[in-house]
Length: 388
Image 1 (tube, rainbow, N blue to C red):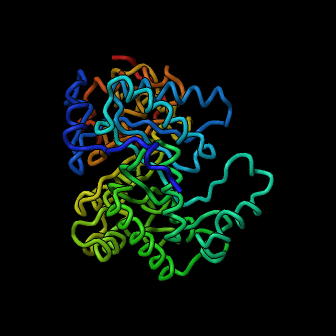
Image 2 (image 1 turned 120 degrees about the vertical axis):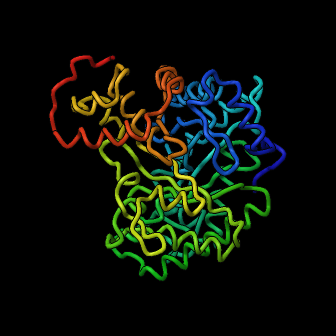
Image 3 (image 1 turned 60 degrees about the vertical axis):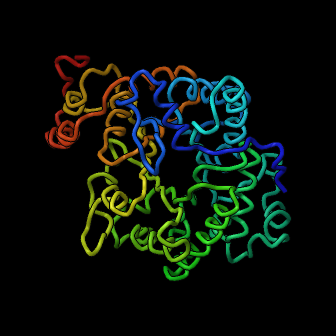
């Protein structure tokens, strides 16, 4: 049972996030409004890293610095670093709130779906699963796919409450169901009707959490599901999924966010027509926009693979930047229709470097399109004036 008296009350609001943006020196270049909230184009992700105290300290310092200097979207998951990332964020937010940042200014997002034990149970995961999940009736064995993924309603509510306690927050701004396509990709994948029925039940549980004030919005965070074609086994049809939310919550349902990777090597969410919208194939971000759903991008550096080695033709299309990492982030944050790109920042130096981009305007739609045109040449020469 979560002790609400120990949790910071409140949630991100229209007025709070707008006030936060107004304090930023380049608000019009970095912030945009979606779902009534003013969000920075660069958010902070907390996925990578070991469980060491050094990495914990790095995340605590990074989150505290980021929310002070222009990042008002912080993203995590209960499974990230076995709950350490959520707890690191809690410590950083306590410091930020004590130093003048308001809870109403910061959008905190987490994810549920992958069953996550505490590190002390690593040697006995089966015992943990039986004792903590199955015996209390949070999920039946058949609800758990590949031994690790579960969307059972009571289990999702349990994970939401754990995340609230870990984060020290009475209300979470966005809870994503984490990689729901995992249940379609396992060795014994669910039949699609059963999968959609499970997703509908999950939405019922999350709408109830909204009604009880524990949650503001929900969505799905995916790796492959939203950016792969309809004939792919793991494909997630956004229009059908949004219709499930409308069945459960009516026109004012709270399924309002989706997350998918978008980077120079994986641009599908922006340019590949993987979604059917009213019978027509369109890219994910177009479908989401027309359905009233906000798209958040993940993995702009592709877990470090895009920090070096970007071909010369592409470098010349993203001028004025000194590093490939900056070019990759600038590409991602410039995707038309993308609200936020999440960048992993486990060191304060990462925060300072990445927030230099927040002082720049994103690429125009024409500059963004030119990247794809230039990439066709496959010319790996360095541009003559790389840093112009």
